[in-house]
Image (cartoon, rainbow, N blue to C red; front, side, top):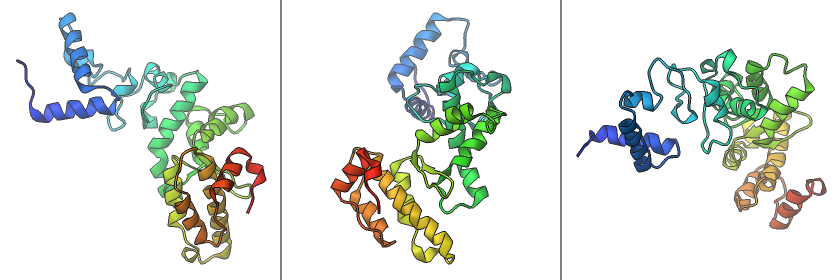
Length: 256
């Protein structure tokens, strides 16, 4: 019976689960492919030749130096797991034309670049994603993003729509990857953190808008008590379940 070192078996299981695959089924498929193709090595069957490009979404690792093919990028559409892509791994001639694939590429690169953007801008909280961040990524693949209303709608606004967004008409749009990330943000900021009254006022408006957006963006119980505890720190009135339902379905009918 063929056996493998324990460390290799553990790495295989971890890799398969990361790709959303059943480890035993993945191993069986690999063994069948190997038996049926005597001229191919296991590395070639997996598409993992060290000098070759990545042709499958599941094999991509942003820490490697391998570049992505258009086929791999197009595989982002409908892929069940979140992927981070290093923009340097995307050759100019491999950027897909399909709008859905291009939006997924913008999202994947945004995930990779988000921490760097947050550190460079020294923003109030690392969880915050700005509309400008999406523009910066879209510009990597679309030279005329600022001159085209259509392209901004397709590759900026529609990407923002995929996130938890809280529009503030006086400030730049802010977004968060998940409801939990937004909750962490409003729980982390306090009035005493800001010596400048104008900055404190902007953050207070953020807490007011984002707390309602949290409740409106989910049909599950996301923790009304947590939302209201954060609002109380700023002297904002609590949102009860009835207000949550009204705001979610008719956002224009609820205000402070």
